[in-house]
Image 1: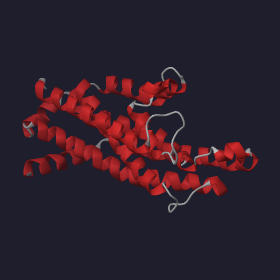
Image 2: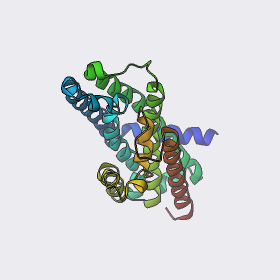
Image 3: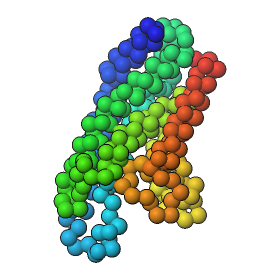
Image 4: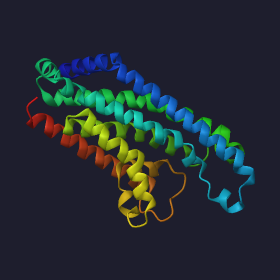
Length: 255
């Protein structure tokens, strides 16, 4: 236990002193809030002129997480860099000399990343959601409305789980450029494109970011198989698989 605590403290010290960490967190907050303001302003200003059908189809809870869904890409990059930077620079050998038990080394990294995402996600997701609801005006919801508390908790978990997924993938690939080159396009473009194509929609909803995103909806999405609960379960399964793959790669390959 002492070794794990010491490894976690060392990982936190390293993580908080890296410029990439600070830059990623700043981008996460900035991007989340910027998109929240843009979406909230656009919908709020056009709400009065919407048809009755459009108003009925509006999901203010889901809209409240528009910024969080975009900004989480910064946490994906942060997770990749936090896990794979030592492999790229070769300093992982030094860390493994200090912490020869690779499971402890790996676990400390995952725990530190999760705690950073939890702290940043709690503040940012809540701020982005409240900002959007304020700008939505009459179309907005309050924290006491049904489904809001559950969606907020899932919104924070979404950020934490995607960061952990990215760390597992980075440990498996051992390359920051390769991991970022796969994950960012997948989450930013590919999943959305596949979800919009009828022939691939059923499969696309099981991708990590899409599945977890269902948990931030205020109402079931028409034509989709996953619900908020099953969507978050699918995302968790992806995280477990990625973390396990990263662990096997770390313990069975040379540093």
